[in-house]
Length: 222
Picture (tube, rainbow, N blue to C red):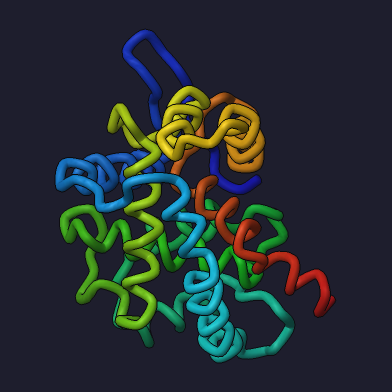
């Protein structure tokens, strides 16, 4: 999948790409402000609203997919960022594109575009990290993206910018479900795409698009 994730060493988990390092830095900054999510169940209850918000992105995606081939290429992405008043360097844009083009087919599908927008939302909170004129120019989506950031902050108990298997189990145990251990393991496996035992924010977002049914809809349309 596009974009490497971190590796372990004696002092913890080390980001392997610039974009991942910026994600971790932005998340740690956000985690210092606290979290409004109280249990994993409260996240699940928000799935329908998040799904509805994601589907509103479809019109934006189709608008930026100028040749209507079902994917957004690098040039179309540059134009879309310009329209959304998001200012990135060439390197930053390429890093984001490669991180979210998980199929490595040089084109961004709808679910990948949603993940990219949420990453932009997170990173735009730190003007020093990415040179943005405004957050992302999509106020209706920003509350949804904030919910996703908040959900990740809730899962990341040690505030290192990653979610481990133990953290996932702890988070779901807080809901008091009898089968919480089994549920936690299943959810974690769905998130940990590269099976390295740690989940970064990008992996979490891709899992979320599956949980709320975005990929299922795309399969039906194909």
